[in-house]
Amino acid sequence: MKKYLALTVCGVIVFSVFFIALRFACDNIGVSANKLEEDIRSSQKIADDWTVTGEVSDTMAAYISYPEDKSDSTFSVYIKHSGLSFGYFFRAGGSIGEIDDGILALTSESLNERAFISMNAQKIARLEVDNGIEVKTINFDSEKPFAIVLPVNAGELRFYDVNGNIIKYHEQKF
Image (cartoon, rainbow, N blue to C red; front, side):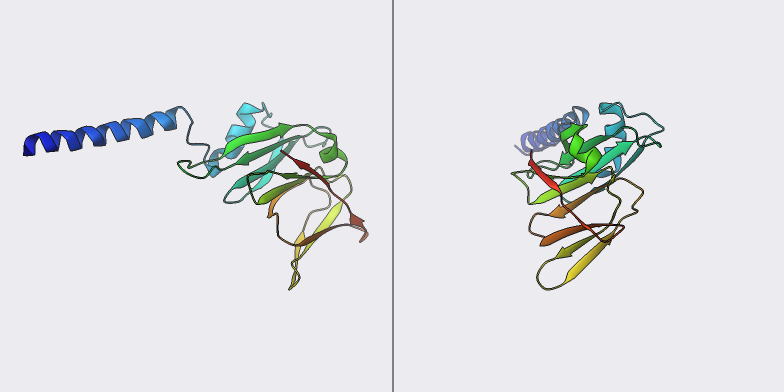
């Protein structure tokens, strides 16, 4: 009886290890945060000489890729599912005019976060996040594109250009 129990336990352990290894091999568990840039470059065919920049939170990752002359751009948004998911899954990406000309806020119906992505043609220098208690300032290099992730309920958001003008953003659900 003890021998049968030991064989059963060993069988369950071997099966579990095999199942987990298979899920990793098939990329069903997701892309780890430290492999997102590699995944973006391969899946969206981003050239090695392009800059890839962005931000990763616990549930969302947002990136923008562009060449040195900023003549083109590609955005990438990944989400992390709850449950048996240890990585991020591609959710949206490509080229879109709102990113080239302004700021695009991408909101997922299933997450409480949104991605703000821009080629920064309007020369955004800072973002003020007013939650009603304090105002947090996030500074940007006005010459560089950006991709950031913020909670949906972060508060009132105000983007400012280098001259102190408030710049509106476009919101889109995905």
